[in-house]
Length: 337
Ligand code: PHE
Image (cartoon, rainbow, N blue to C red; front, side):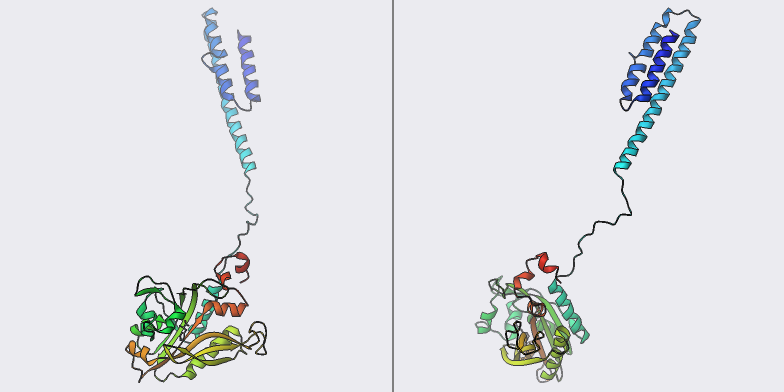
């Protein structure tokens, strides 16, 4: 019986040593209720009373060493598995990361910020107004009564008879003058809307930047100096500007302003369509009616205003020939700025 026990023990320890998994199967086989050691214990009835305890002790010893071997092996297997897992999931924290493409501001935002900086540098502050605007501010107060032909060129989207999407940033002039007494020196960038079909030069949504200065003794000379400084900053120090007579209902006199072509310097090229000049904005002296509408006495105060399209400035500056590129979010376009 001792030999049998020794054999079982040896076999068990060897198998445990060689096991790669399935320790449970071995445990059941040797130590389980129907296992080999249990069977041996049952057979002890055949032994003499003196031998029984000795044999019992031997069996217990065998059981203990098998149990110990099992738990040792289990720990070893766990360790091995962990090692394998660590090896397969190895992470080199010193490797450079996968580079994410860096985004940047949209070219229109860049141009807007550049213009804001230029005007802030000249003492302007930024005013804001709503995109959903009252007819009164977008038209009436700007000296464009109902049925005025100027409404045709600024047809927009109506929410009701009296509420619309602003077709220009000029209503901010009125809102500012209602809230603030002169001296006033503000710019107001923002979205504007017109009921135009989308093509290379038109978009139902685009961006403008309005300027307004009101104080005692403001003249057209101030307007000219301000716009010339602005043009030189945006298009280069040798840029000249030119005023052409024009008409806006809310300025008198009114002008359209051109800059000398910064590609050819004024000799004529493709960009300026051989004109030597590029139209960039509308401006004029604030109409006395508009000042009166805002309770500012035109006999005491005068002012100038201007309005420019941000898309037009960006297109001119960067030689972009299709306004739709700004809104399509095509990275091949955007990444160039
Ligand atoms: N609001 C005018 C437009 O959209 C531009 C403008 C602004 C003209 C201010 C004169 C003064 O065409």
